[in-house]
Image (cartoon, rainbow, N blue to C red):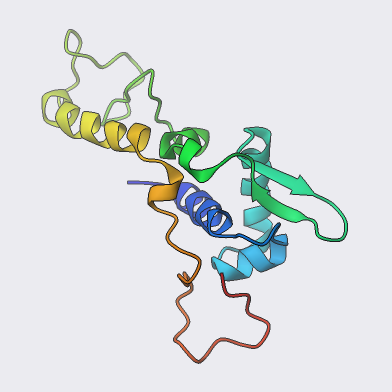
Length: 153
């Protein structure tokens, strides 16, 4: 249901939420959550502009959450990358005209209940609920096959 960009953004933010020891370098973040570094840089710029990520240059610099994970709702992230809005429900068929109970598309009656549940989940769920714990590893590498430069969360 989410684009790869939204998935990557949530992966990166979840990793940052698990950090207790300061900022994470972009290249380490990219490796830890298996996101191409150039793509991640673009995502982090959007997240920074939205106030969800802070950056610090120099020694001890890198990326960290812009506010506590329990204050960031999934919708805050997803709205940045998807055509979804808490204020304006989207048409399942992607129609450009309004899709509502008074002007429904052909899928409206089937979609509206699921859309309300999905939107409710995004609005009510904080990042902290999906971030995991400091010991969680999000890479697809098998245990014991990580190289020595791999940064574990």
